[in-house]
Image: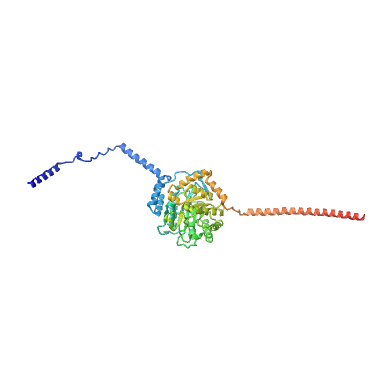
Length: 498
């Protein structure tokens, strides 16, 4: 009987479930009806999105935005290893999607070097854009001097990775790249592609009125240590497409390279590159031939710097960059990466570079400009180099840590510093150079020598005339004295007779 009842109950339950329909009123959680879309609502949404995107774009493309210094740059530094982050930054600058410096430079920042004017004295040192991929993107950040390279004649991979190390607590960097380069052919092709088909613009390789484009010439690792051929080849290759060529004999990461700073080898090197420069054919891009600049290490002692200065004075080299990275490790370094091999850059290098620059300034005439480089990250740093006799300055590590707005911040700080001094950059530099430089002894010209000989002849004639007059007078005096003596003798004789 119980089984029969259970069966009837199950049948009734199934029947009830089939007849049951879930209605909206029976749901525990009801879903509200979607809002009705109207043209006005859609237009408002579209306007808000467009305006927000526009504002973000304006903020992003302004290199001064805190977004770059405090968000993007730190993310790159901590999310990627040093070399990958470096390469990513170059690619962004190459793409045309990088921020730009939207502000015109203050007139107080104008500077002169080799008779050419630049809108400001802040340049970018070699090492960031090794293969000339982001030249225009870097100029757009406000640098007046962009130096690409080092570029070697043949492609080479450089030293094994890892080879770049951050020292965040020290705001420094150690690298042992070893001149990784795509080679002359690749970089030259990229530089040529920048040139417009019909160029009527400024007579500068930078393609800008107030900027300079420099190429840093490196040496292949397998080349003989004492050979100058790689540098001579570099001058011939890049001379027609550069405002400045930098002879880099100071990298600590290529075996034997720093040996070229020794007097005898340096004389041969500078003689070779200046002859190659002077023999360059006229360029379709620039009318004048490129300036030649030597880049030296901060680790040289005073005697070595004096020898280098002597070689430079007797050569046709146009200037010196002081300085490259250092192999020294100051005791102030705290990051564990301080023990890595390679060249150290950043604030710890500044005292070494300044010392070397002051010594060299005192051994070179004012006609040879110096470019300061090493530990510059503020306007005050730049001004300190100017007061030591540097015509321009370059940044590198500070740019890596502060991001795309570094150049603009340094320039703004420098304007404030100059305002407190009540001077312009050129005035500060000219005063320092005039005070600290070696005083030039003017070499006599043929005209000067002819004038000097004529003067000596005239003076000789004048002296002869004076002597003749003196002789005549002395003769007259002698006759007069003789007569007086004769009269006296006659008088005495007459007195004796009497």
